[in-house]
Image (cartoon, rainbow, N blue to C red; front, top):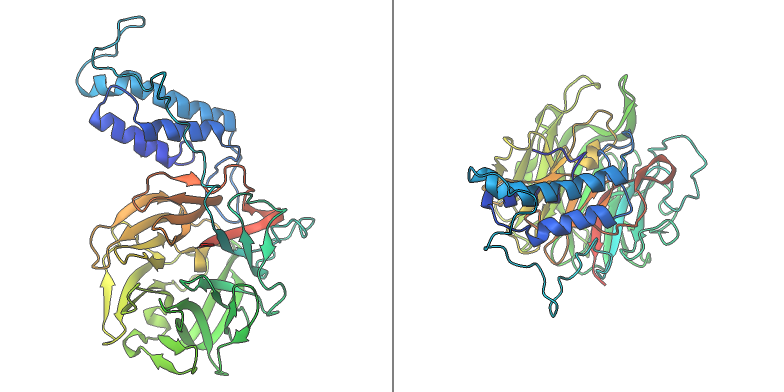
Length: 440
C-alpha cells in the first residue's frame, strides 16, 4: 500500500482502481485527486499529536501526484495486459476518447468542501486556535475546550469558543443533539461531571448529581431527550505518566457501567450487563443507533506499564430494552478499536483504531486509522489513516488528519474541509482531535 506520508489516499485508491481495470484514460476521480494535490495550499504530514514529523515539500508532493497519474495513463493498462506502452509520437489507440469537447469542457475538480453549509464544533486541547496563547512553548494538555469553525474560512480569525470559561473545569468528549440545538460534554474535574447547554451557549446546567462517582462521555439519543453516559465509581484524572511523558485520561474505578439519563426528570437507568470492574475494561464513548434501540461503545484494555500502549480493545453493542450485550469482531483490522459513531441511516458504524478520545496525546501512538463496520459485525472496511471520525447528517464522514477532512462513507471523494484552512495540529494553536458537523 502506498504510504499516506508521500501520497494522498484518495490518489492511491484511484491509481489502484485504474491499474486493476486497465482503461485507456485516467478516471475522473484520479484526475481530481491529482488536481487536489496541485491546488491545495496546506501540506499533509504524518498524523501525530503532539509530536510532529518533518515538514513535507508541497511542490515535491504535488509533482509526485501528477507524475503518478501520468505513469498510470501511459503504462497501467498495457503492463497488466502484457503489453508495453506506445512509443513516443505513435498514433493514439482507436479506443481512446477525448476527455472534453469544445462544447462540453471538463469541469474543474473541487479542491475541498469549503462551500458546504454548516459549522464544525471541534474538541480541542492545548493553546487556543485563535493564537491568543501562541507565545507559550508549553503543551498545556489541561486546556480542554470546544470551538466553532466555519468551512468557508477555517482560520484563526474566525474561530470562536463555545462557552468560554464555563465551566471552569473545562470541556471534552462532547456530543451534539441530532437537531443541532444542544451540546453535552464532560469536564475534567475529579470526579468528572456531565453538563448540557444550548448551542447558543444559554441554559448551561450540570447533569451529574452523585458525589463519589464520575460521569463520562455523554451521547444524545435520537430524540434529544435522553443521554447515554458512562458511570464510574472511582476517580477520574488527567495525568502524565511514564518516561515518554505521555498525557492521558485515566480512571481507577471499582465498577463502571453505561447508563441512560432522562433530561426532563433526571431519572437514570443502569444497563446492568455493561457493568464491570477495571480489570474487564470500562465502557467508553457510547453512541445511539438512529432508531434508539441500541447503543454502541468501546472498551480498552490497558497494561500495567504506563510506558506501554493498550494491549487490546473491543466494540460492543447493548440492546436498550433487554440489556443484552454483544461484541463486534473487528480485531483483525483494528486491534484497539474505539470512538464509535452510528451512521444516520443505521447501516454502518464508523470508528478509529487507537481512539483519540483517550489516546490522542500518547507519544509513539501507531498511526490511527478510520474504519466502518455493519452493526452485525460484518464488512469491516478500512478507509485510511486518520482519527476522531464522526458522521455528518448527509451520510458523509468528517475526520481529523492534521486538519479536518471529509470523505464519502466508502472512503471516496476524500478532500480537506478547506484547502487553505489553518493547520490544527501545531503547538501554537493547539490540537483539534474530534469534529462534529452541525447543519445550519
